[in-house]
Image (tube, rainbow, N blue to C red; front, side, top):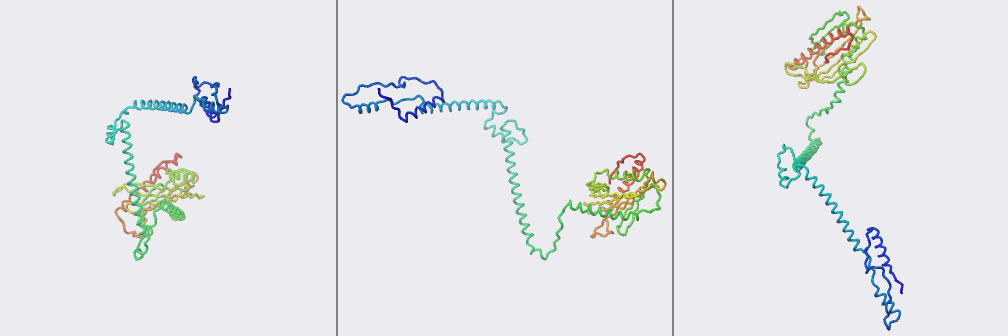
Length: 401
């Protein structure tokens, strides 16, 4: 019996077949034709040498066949792909069944085209109508965006043209141009407040010259119209309020009265306010832009409160001012238990350099009259509340001007 020789190619094929068999783990098929080869002896042909007989035996040796060939592996791969596709089809069929259960989901192409013609005010019911609404909204947004881009481009072109024109300074040599300062509301507000603060400090130095020392301590309120040499037409309001409390309590009560409105900035013995004041008049509602600055000066034997206002009336290009002194001193009869509040107030028109003091208008007269009446009513209300509060030692609540 001659030995069986296996080539390198046969060994590789055997290894691949073994690995494929382990991966698939299927039962091997038995066949008589592929059984283990058994070497059989053949009758040597007569007249042949031993070498020729050996070569003849090798040529007639049948080729081995393996169950796990390359074609078998390919078929199994196709089978696995078919199974995966079937599973995916089943999942898609389940999703389709769920979609069919949604109300209004069975829409044909005609339904979708009809949904695009629905009136915008109609409430969408089906998914086709909802999609149509979203589609129309997107188209409208795209149109609006295109218009805005066009406007923006036009604005840029206009700005560039104006910039080019303004840069040609040679064209402006023989022309009189007024270049106003840019409008800065915050800077203007701070500047006005600084002016009011400086004005209050200046008014505090004049407190001694304002009040007459021989004045009686009885309750009174007087309003007079005078022609001041430096201020022009002025309304002066003078009041005296006796208070049944010591100097310290009277000062705190008066300051609490003024602090009812929240100030712009929190500083000790200082109040700053900026607000709109509306007054009814013969010419309609007057809208004043008011800025108020107030400071309290506590001295050894008295308390001085100085108050300054700027009231602007932009509609008629008018401006008014108010400056007030309030001095609280111990009363002469019982200096430890009682005190006296004296007030001197001036309201006048703030004329600029372009308008003389003698020139007036009906709007100016009406606004001036309403402001004078407001400040007089305020002092009368303050006077009555101060007297009541000092008796009960309570915090007052009143109007604010």
